[in-house]
Image (cartoon, helix red, strand yellow):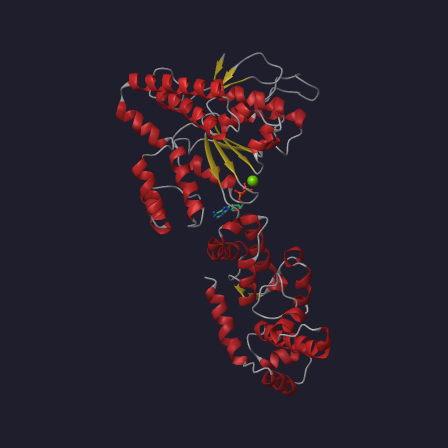
Length: 461
Ligand SMILES: Nc1ncnc2c1ncn2[C@@H]1O[C@H](COP(=O)(O)OP(=O)(O)O)[C@@H](O)[C@H]1O
Ligand SMILES: [Mg+2]
């Protein structure tokens, strides 16, 4: 058996008889806990068997008698004491974040004070110093990879490699070689010995993204790494010991996959020993203003320009938007509008697929202002505002819609030009005094837009 170099033998995991045996016991207890938690059907005999195993483990723990050390390991592996759990739920988001900061927690650029995000960070904090595998689930773009980096950064492996593998992006026939390496001549094209990602991540962390896509054959091999920390390169008989901490992520329901026989149940329990769920952005909308400001500054710096201002209408639209691509989509959107808009961005600067069919009206400047685009076409909103819905009132409805469109056009235009009537008249090739008449008709004051444009740029910060 080949044993890879370890930079610090004292921190080596799974050394029999060392302090890590506590971690080993906790690991076993956690497996049992998660089996009891996740199993959908358990026969009475199975429950009794699990209970017997738990009691054997409990005896072992008691025999170890280093009670304090055990408690310390238990707390750092995420179990936590009852009083701690109680105080956690009472604390305000700000104080919870502050407490993390006070404990020198490394956020790695993770923003937000949403209670569910903080809960995920608090679990990450406790999981980080252990070698237990962590499973992170959440929709695409919710920050799973970032969370994996947070776990890595807060543990003792922080200055060791962090290796990311997207299991969904590697063809099935290459996956084994990618993860475990291969020996020269193992298959056509294997011209040289090559080490795999597990060896590259030795002493560090491997991030297995889209773990739900891992074929069953790969799952068996992964289970073996989890159980014995051993790998074999493809085509080689030699066993190599690796000390690689595993963090896996998925946007699929692994439990359902395992019920369907597509994901090994034992692997699911093993990986999900510590389970972190990241909520989609639409369920933490309170984070959106902060993220808009943060990515606005980031994009401005990257593109070497001033942070883009957002019209109130765009801002409202972004706050109401469902963000199916979550934080990744928000970040990309801000980069896009910072690049495409001038000083101030509006809904028209969003990509077409974000605007939906009703938003086409806004591209020609005819949409109602200050309202969400999601359910309001100009005609629809004008009819609603005037309370006209009967088919007989068609003429009335048409006039109201036309008025609403005219008004929206003027407001949109004034916002674009920062409230300068002469400039708007020039852009629309319209007589300036005619424009003044229209503004008066709608009771619109150009100077409000001078103030508003400045304030909107500010309000984003
Ligand atoms: N809470 C957060 N604060 C700041 N940036 C975040 C946050 N969550 C995700 N991001 C950013 O969003 C993008 C997508 O995150 P990522 O971790 O790749 O998501 P996933 O792996 O779930 O698809 C990255 O640019 C990441 O830095
Ligand atoms: Mg990802």
